Length: 71
Image (cartoon, rainbow, N blue to C red):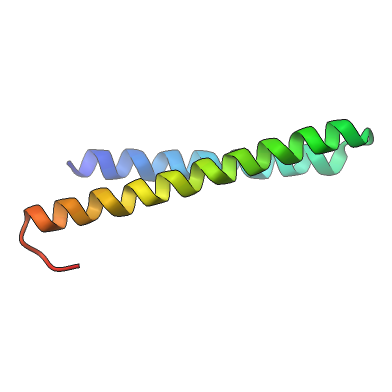
């Protein structure tokens, strides 16, 4: 089960890297439409990160409950 938590953490890292990449592209864009496009992609990745963090926390709580631990 630890493999699931590790996989989620890795996915969170990927989302953060994508956010940074899209932010750089947005900052470099001269065309306002292109800038807005990359800004929206960054927001999408931020939302993905939040979903993954929520799933990580929920899964971690479930594992701890299965072990009889209080969180």
